[in-house]
Length: 163
Image (cartoon, rainbow, N blue to C red; front, side, top):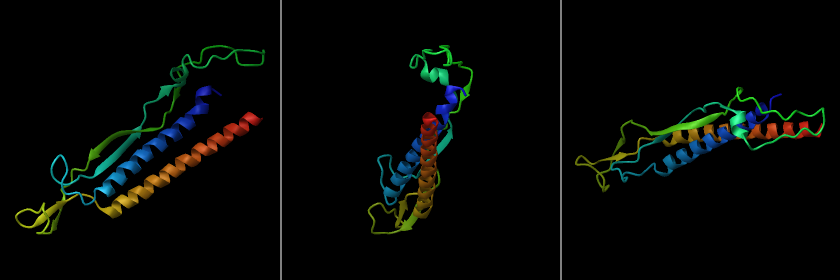
């Protein structure tokens, strides 16, 4: 089995952990600003949404170039030849962008609020706490799934080394 395939599943799980962590951080920021009516940009806080995409594939040779030098100490061992760089190794997922939700703010009637307009309406952030909590649970479950896959891969690699 080519060496690149051994580590690719670890890279995929690690990238998934990183992306879901970023997603949870963004959702937590949304929840923390659920009542923010005035920001530095002006107006109410705008919900942020994380967009993930497939990370561009790399080759294992580029990843370990000049880092691992294998020496043949027995005729049964792998020969000291360069790793072929033509085999694409999947790299998992990445956060491609975080954008502000363009939907309009919620208008809430509160004439005593300092940010109320002439009609007494306050522009509140364009987010729903229930939606944010569902997204948070989804991100937490995806994080746990990536962690389980990472640990299973580590256990399989450990058992393979014991053989």
